[in-house]
Length: 388
Image 1 (tube, rainbow, N blue to C red):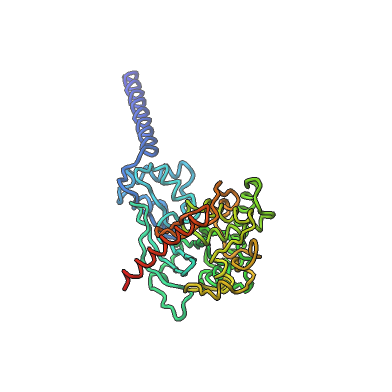
Image 2 (cartoon, rainbow, N blue to C red):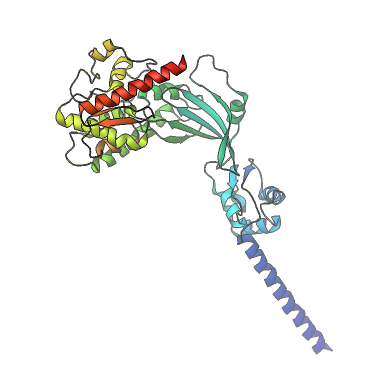
């Protein structure tokens, strides 16, 4: 009898252990396998939230199959106490293991609301945007000019500024002047410590910069300057041979002219080749953006066409009057313009004019150029007639 009882007990233990092993194996697979989420979601974790409430919300939203397995896995991986507040993008079919990693990793919020400050050539805008996790596209909630006098601040901006997980970015466009950058940064209520001294023209890199509330304006400018210095140094190191440029500073001047002459990225090398060929041949550059800079000195936009008297006026930047390059850049060029200036296309072009499509028609001879100009004048006349 005792022998029979012992035998049954051992059998039950074996079955129990086998069952437990099966449960553990199932749990491990469930934790690491592809999840049930059919479309990406944005999971917001408030400060003070615990893993239990997060796992319950994930289960309710169909992101995980078992809140219990999720919590056990987080505990086993020693991440249960590392939950980070913020807005976290949970991609479709994410495993529990991946979700635990996402919500405990920290760093900037990966979804939710973003305030983007856009410093453009013609305007400065603050945009309140929200990411749609299903499409990875932003939806604009509000927009205003933070530099305008008596500006009305949208309620959406105020409410998002109060959220701890809101992301902040500054986007600086190519061709913006240093004065425009400083004027815009000083106007942002997210930044502190206004700056009066304007950095050297061309010394700031157009790019996107993530910031935190309370960041000093000077610190942002330092980041922009360091980025531009690195870009210029790399491009100068990899420059083409036999360029009519003696220093990286001259390359930056030429790049700024290329930047202001075309908005079509693909033709920057061709535009650069025109100016390089002119420099080699001792021809004046004769480019309108340098005349405009001589009038404004980078402080704002001219907002009208050039007058003949201005084309003839003597300023340090007027390349219709001076020989060679102007003394300073006329804007902050981007990486592509700098690389084009130092690796221009191999052409014999010395002329170009607008072609009516946003780009330019290039020419090697004056006769070809005059023909292209005639085509452009006809396009201008037709557009003017259509507006009347």
